[in-house]
Length: 112
Image (cartoon, rainbow, N blue to C red; front, side, top):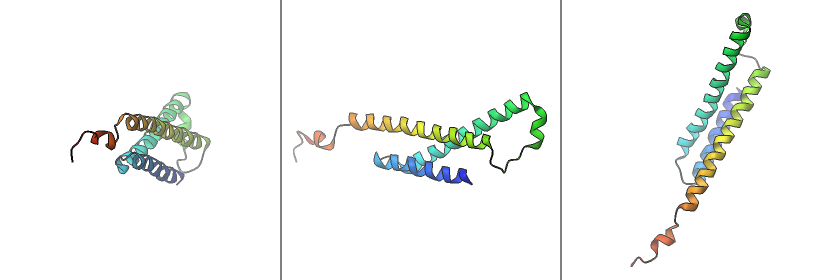
């Protein structure tokens, strides 16, 4: 349930960034969802492989519905990944915005 709220927040966070720089909002919202879910899957598979190698008998009693320390760590890592990609995109958009000439500069010399 908490993952759904994190996904909604990440989607809105990226959509606001895209709107601020005149990009397509839903593209970047879906990117946020992809980054979050990709990080969750990577962490889950990595932890599952680690547990399977170290103690194969522990995999029989896995509870997928509860809150555990591993779930909380994976949420924190996923949120950090979403935030990191957000900062990279923001830096990229600011660089693009600075390098793009303004509309007034392009109109210099035009005869109306």
